[in-house]
Image 1 (cartoon, rainbow, N blue to C red):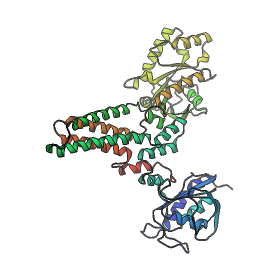
Image 2: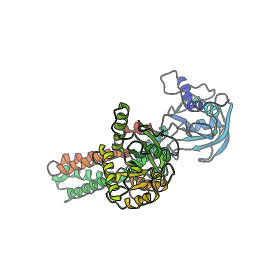
Image 3: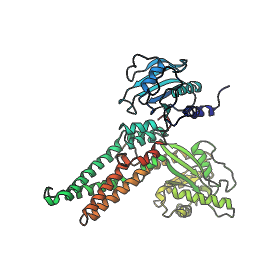
Image 4: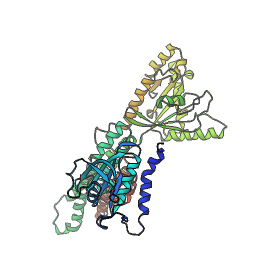
Length: 515
């Protein structure tokens, strides 16, 4: 009988628990039961983990990093006299260092420091991906003195501390691991390449120069050792940096939106076909569809890939006045979700739209005001009108509406569709993709964009601190210099060069165990 899926998910946790219970002292090193392995030879900080993810597979990759890596390689592969050439795959029998039992036969790779992902000595064991093999190899690794299971993201954290990756590159790597669409992959790969980090480092270098000049002026200006115009140069640099950062912040959250997904909400009156549209877009019966008004009571959410861009699509309760307390809560949640939406698909039953174009435009404008009433400032440019059930209209009327409503400038884009016959869905998806692409932008063109909310917060603090310099420049130069120093600190918190410790745990905990 095959193991249940829970067996695969429990392999790592069970192995970690087994290894940790072996340590019966307060000493951080694991006790060894191996004969012939000198206790204390290995560094207690050497870590290991399954890096290739859980589940049955053809090949699983186990990664080891730390000063004991070479010891592990020798003991478990029989390479007692010499290590294999660096970064060269070697086929070996992998044995238990205690019992000498052969556990598997696979490829081993040796990455000596500093030319490895973590900057430390590293070993990779490419073994067969069955749960019994993985468990046996992990337990064998844990029996070696000084070895311990890695925490989530610990390999990447070591790479950061070794200077192999900057903090923005680490975040890009995390985004790449979690990328689900083509555009997310491109943006993450660009950030991981260091382009965003280099931009922030360039700003940091300029601020360091400004701070050095201001402090030099404070300390030595009375001795006439400072050239004339030093502060004027600082003023010019601060002003230019402030302008660049403000422009960087005016990105309409494109990078953050691409990273987390465009929030698209389907809204409208009851029985307009909102749930039918959701089911058509996600190509499965995600929401219940019935002719009974008010069937949808809660928000039904699903993730989609629209032409390579991530979309979080939400179907909501039909908007109407009701005495039903449950339905009232559904309407409240629908309006709340619309306030948070990047794009609202306002679905209208085409049977209620007047045949006269002018009357139809007036009707749709009023309907939009009613649907978007919950928004403090209704934005029709963040809205797409979807006239559903066009299969119920005469063909001449449908064609006339389709032709004439496109010319009405006071309305947002209009798509005529039929969820029953699929008519118009292809054109609707083309329009939707165009809007989503505009909201996310092209991740490969122009300057690198903000991808994290914390980046935005620190850059806003940086701009405020530069304003402090300008405010106190003529009255109190020491306070002005402190403004530049605070601005530099804010940038350093993004790149990890200044005061990064308090944010490291937040960043690295989102990584998988073997990364």
